[in-house]
Every structure is written in structure tokens, then in C-alpha cells.
Image (cartoon, rainbow, N blue to C red):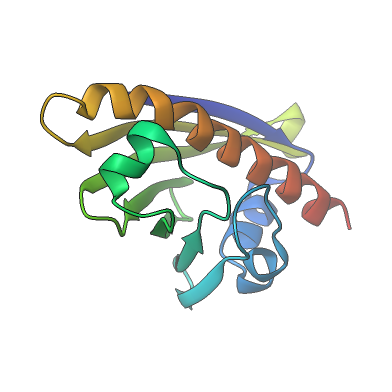
Length: 158
């Protein structure tokens, strides 16, 4: 299932990219129904973190995951010279669930602001119900990406 999003930030491209690779940004991030991210690794062009769903899974989600505890690893890689990147999210439940997205950072407003575009694909590899699971998961993933963007705007404004 396709996942697309675009977010504008009142900061130049370099500042947005630097913030997304800053472990301090992720360490202070608070999202609804998600535990605080744990930064696992970071360097000049990549950051990897572990996250955990703090809400309650019900119905199909619980049957597919086999547990209420859903964790995932999120890896962000940026090519700062080309202003592109890749986001990879992989679940740590009994089925293979991945979300892979290409990122593009474009200067807007004369370079004083940035538009980040995300174009991705969510895949749940479960026979017969994978598509249904994707339809249920996609809105939550989109919301989390939107919530991260709100937090990033706040971070950049400080």
C-alpha cells in the first residue's frame, strides 16, 4: 500500500536534514501511543532507532502480531549532497511488516524553507489478510509521520 506525505518546514534544507540526523531530536521526541525512541546508531548520514507501540492492539492486529507489544526499527539515511534519503521501518513481530520510503528535500520560499516529500510502500506479508492489515496500519503510520513533522517544526523553531 502506498504511503505519501509532504511537510513544509520554516528552515533551510541543511537545517532540516541536520535535525533529522540529530540523536537529540529523536531522544526528546514524544508521540501519542509510542514509547520514546531509543537511538541505536548514528553517524553523519544515518540514524537508526528502536520504537515501541504503547497502545493496545485489538482484533486483526493482535492476531497478526501475536502480541500486544509491537516494536520496530526505523532507519533514516540521507544523501545531503543530493537532498534525498530513504526511510526504512521494519517490525519486530512474527510477520514481516516493512515500510520503505524515498525522501526528497526541496528548498521553497527562496531557500528559507524546506518541503520534505515522502513516497513509500507499506507491505505486510501475511497470506489472505496482508492487504487488509496494510489498510489498517497505513493511517497510523501516516499519522505518526505527521506527528514527527510537527515535532520537527517545534525543534527547528527553538
